[in-house]
Image 1 (cartoon, rainbow, N blue to C red):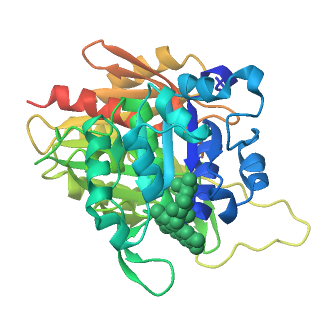
Image 2: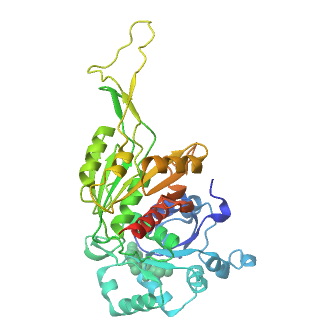
Image 3: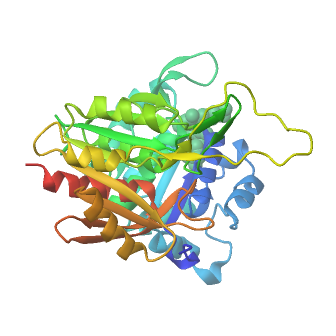
Length: 407
Ligand SMILES: Cc1cc2nc3c(=O)[nH]c(=O)nc-3n(C[C@H](O)[C@H](O)[C@H](O)COP(=O)(O)O)c2cc1C
């Protein structure tokens, strides 16, 4: 199911007058590409750094800095009231001060006063400005009132200076926005602390000759989202990654593999002391019976030889049946093209896993997408639907259900 326009989370991106304003463009792009309804409210100063045309084109929405445009729509009240999240990135010392004192002299400050949704500030400024007692007191005031103020990073600042005050990686701010939107707060439960979880991700490749393979369309994004969310919840994470092209999640032990046989070996080895194993990878059911040591060549005009296939081991069933630790939780994934729930129930019983995440696949669905929709079936008969949304949401639901089943 495609996400409808009115279901998209509404994000107001406030941009203020610092050098890091250009990084707001990257954040905006990530927000819009992942299905958010994002609108930019820059300050006058921000437009010295990035033109209104850039924000308008990237967001597909009009851009205004004061309260006197489209007055009949009362934007100074509406934009804040209708928002699901306001994120000010970068946030100058000036906007932090104005927000702490409730000033309302432009569209962004009005929006901050009318918003009743979560508000994130990502400050960026010179170290002296950040450390000034006035700024520190303003930050403390905002935090006390419930706003989330991100600590600036340490690094190269404008000019040749280095120190605390750098705008954090836009990807980090984006992840924070997603987390706040999906879970209602930036707080992450540490309920997987002390646990070791093993996750497989990506799609296996079964070689036919040195240049060809049988593969599948799995991007690995769901498995990586599972790894990121598990690490954020305190778990030690082993991610067995089959042919992915994604950055390694921070703090996660990544084991690259290519074939189903290599994936099996890596997962079985890591599962030895694991509390949970989640098989999100798309593992080939079959592989070519014969591997040609040299590239298979055309035989003049003759028809090519058919490719004979043999069955690969069923890793999920093996993991579920031979559990190296009592109480280990095993989770499988099933991508179905029809009768998803009925087929999922049958698969869950056959594989003997504890949970099975069932999603229907088709064109533009699941493979390579940022979002997903699924039902998590439990061996105890439970059914947990997860509506269309970020893969992190499905991941967090999986970890909620796994944590409930730990002995
Ligand atoms: C080149 C340049 C870079 C600036 N960078 C920052 C900055 O990173 N952080 C900050 O708080 N102020 C910075 N300032 C100062 C702000 O632009 C100034 O305080 C302005 O009034 C902020 O307005 P605003 O908060 O309405 O956007 C910079 C100014 C200039 C000229």
